[in-house]
Every structure is written in C-alpha cells, then in structure tokens.
Amino acid sequence: MSKARLVITALFVDHQTPAEVAARYGVHRAWVYKLKARYEAEGEAAFEPRSRRPKTSPAALAPEVVDLIVRVRKQLADAGLDAGPETIAWHLEHHHRHRVSRSTISRHLTAAGLVTPEPKKRPKSSYISRATPATLYDSMPKALPRPATDPDTHERIRHDRVDNAGSVTLRHNSRLHHIGIGRTHARTCVILLVQDLQIRVVNAATGELLRELTLDPNRDYQPTRAPKGPTRKTTK
Image 1: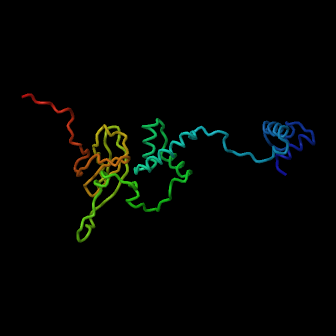
Image 2 (image 1 turned 90 degrees about the horizontal axis):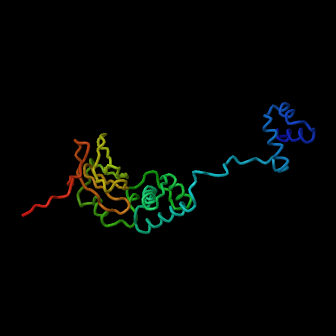
Image 3 (image 1 turned 30 degrees about the vertical axis):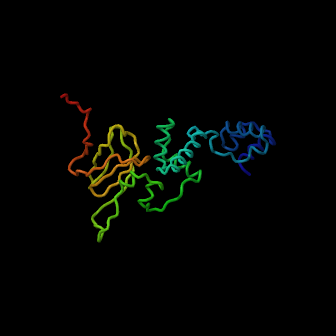
C-alpha cells in the first residue's frame, strides 16, 4: 500500500488528526493537509500519478508564429531560395518583427515533417537550393576539362552572417581574417565559396554575388576597395 493510501486510511478510517498522521509516517504536515483536501475533492482520483509538466509554457511560440515559420519556409522553397532555419530566422526578424532562434525554428520544421534527415557527411550540393539563381550559378567554381585535379586545392563552403560593421570572418591557415562586404549588407545571411585564396560571398536568400576577392593572407582585414564617399564632380 502506498504511503498516500496509508495517510488517507489513518485520516478517514482511524480518524487521526493530520498532526498525528504526519508524526506517525514521518511526512510533512502540509503534505497531509494537501492530500486530505485532494481526497475530499477527487476521491480515488487523488491517488493517480500527477504529471510534472507545467500547465503553461511561457517560452512556447504562439500558434500564429509557428504557422508563419511554415509559411515562410514554403515561400522560400517555392522561390528556389535557401529555406534553412538561419534564412527563415532572418526573414522573421526583418520582415515580420519576430526574433526566433534557429534551434526553435528547426524543431518546429521537424515537427511539421518539413525536414529530411541528412547523412553525416553533408554534400556540398545540399547547401544550395534546388532552383539556383543564375548569379549563384555564375559564382560557383566550374569544372574545367583538364587532365587531373590538383590534390593541393582546398574547397569549402561556409555559412555566415554579415556583422554590424559590414564584414564576415574566415579562418585561413589558423589565422582569422575579416572580409569587408559593406555596411549596407549588415545582418545579411551569406554563403562563402572558398577555393584556396579565391573567395566568393553570396547572399544566401537571393543568390546575389556580394563580393569576389583573392585573400591576402598577410593582412587581417580585407577591404572592399569601395570609395568612402561620393565622387566629387569636376567643373570645366
């Protein structure tokens, strides 16, 4: 017999006081009063195990936000654009004024059956959406007819977001470099296509080529070389 039933039996059959029952079974008197009130209100249902799950979840997303996540995902996918959690988070924040973490978006996409499990080693092609814009296609390294591939060539694809200063970071030979993109692109989700020192920076949402450069490994910041101010007109 459970301790709860022993307490109820002592209270309602043996007619002991809550103080006597608490002392007899070594339990807190407040718990005895609580169990007594539950039994008087619910009867035998008072002995059923109670869920520890909170009645409300303050951190849970509102249903309309969950629906918005699914809708934005569909709109991006139908347009042939990147529809990953990071891109969706950018659209939610900049177009709908909702700030949602990538992990939360990923969790709701999975619950909606919109995420397909991927292999442990992700192919490079999976980073690009199925209807790739022409600008993104033009920015990709092309396969050229040559006898053999140089084994010393290193290629990689990296996702990032332009910081408030208008730059992204890239590590080369254990040294971190800052690549200037421009303040107008601050907070933009981008894809870095890296082939040794040749780098292309592409807008992850639109496929627009934002910058193409050859990395200078001897300097930290890679400037855009863009003029700092408006060009002054000369008078004749």
